[in-house]
Picture 1 (cartoon, rainbow over the protein chains, first blue to last red):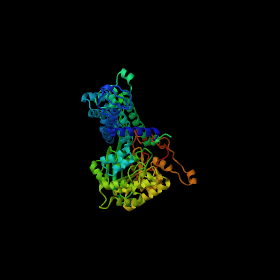
Picture 2 (picture 1 turned 120 degrees about the horizontal axis):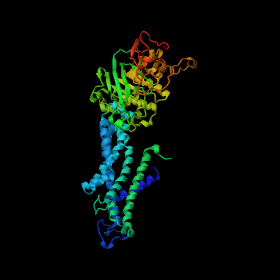
Picture 3 (picture 1 turned 60 degrees about the vertical axis):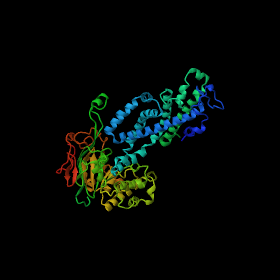
Length: 271
Length: 345
């Protein structure tokens, strides 16, 4: 593992701890407004300043970590489980099943630009945390399925799987005891990169007003509320802190993903 | 041939394994694919018997279909047509469920000892897996049975908790053999079991397999491209070329007096460990590679490389005929009356 991976792990750890201990770290109530203190600059009382309604940006960023990581973890877990399952079926059974799944289903999902499909889904389902997660899972699973299919396709031809078959192992046994444990590695990388993608998608959708409705402190929503050229000029901190939180989170998971890829595939390890 | 009572344990009847590579469809024409269907005829009409207790050696060049034949025999590769009888029961047309029952009696040893063991399972679990899936521990503990098997193949029972990567190639092959023996099989397909091993280890594994054969009354199909290994272990030898058996005879006969030109060439390719004889002996050198099994040559498949080929060889597909007693060959230029090819006419 290289230095960037450790930096990634450190940043991610800070965000995860922040999310867990949010009530102890936050200095103010995230919804408490103070209309006399709109757009206050960072100070000892308000570390990151306040927003248009005089709410404490620091506390909102801290609670925002909860939303972002919650979305990230749930989306990655659910889409990975669905993707691994469907991808395994396609790769293992091959033939018609594979032709249908990877030839039609996967390609249909991949043909849509992910975010556009998510926007359409959210527009159809309505806003809200649960619906946002659902929409991101719908676009997310196919990436895992495709990687998994390739892995299973490769590993099911290995001699030890043939040996298990010759020894009377059932299809499910071949798949779960012999193929899956040997196929899962690239999926771990995919998942850590997917974490970054999910956080970013949540922010994007919230920014577009299609994510988590206000007043919930989502980083994307906070940036959305800071739109406008005068705000940018006069109080950039309103935009800066949630923006940097998104950037750091995404960066940390990308570093972790890249590091894991190198670590798990020794052939790619740099000297 | 050694003493076999002549009872066939396995019989193949016109076994074919073809792999469809696609092509020939409407879409293929539009997308620039092959306009005609492309089919690899890996095994194309093989008929022979394996007698109980014998070792049948199967030799041939790389890509001639040896391994596919071995796998098809155990239904690890789908069979296109033909029959595989085991004790009179047709495996080719058995259901998955019936086949699973038969797998207790039919086992396989693989070529690559590095690929044939699941890297994430301990030796105990690898060898124990068939015992658990078939419930064969006979009341005793699975571990106990695994340890016995490990001793049978000459491994210390202390290694039961270790992982495959901790072993050498030869030891891994022993683990593979122990796993095959776990179900107490009658018949084992050994698919190039020694070709990935060092020469000194090759002999150990061959001797182990021979000892096990006597102890447990096993029948082997021993697949190899190593003619010397085959000579050492086999009772009878089948020579395969591009998906077909071209010669089949007792091991002594085939080495002493190969009839079909391909077999002659193969056997003359084995170096003699005496430099004087080696420098004087006549060799048949084959030129070119094995033709592609996608579009095999017409007539006799060997005619493109055969030094004795005549015009008719391009047209007539030779049958496997008994040229001499128990010595079968497929060549139109030889017959029981006239078993040797005269010079080119």
